Length: 90
Image (cartoon, rainbow, N blue to C red; front, side):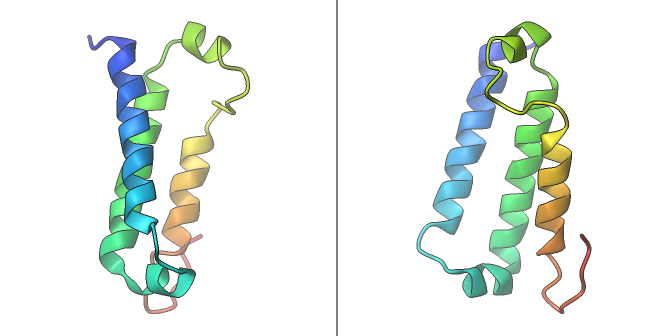
């Protein structure tokens, strides 16, 4: 089993990657780029998977973070913007 610090690192790295992917692009550019949208959705999935594997102890030490099932919402919200042909998924 992986040490929890590795899952926390996965979360930070994925969040940093998302920040790099969307840096300097506006909403229209984001909406029109299947590549960027797909990359963001993938990293949201990484965050969700890593967060799901953290212990209750770690989560309890960080009550300011809405652990719950936020990653499911985040993933489905991001899927809403995935339809470049105007199709709404969210």
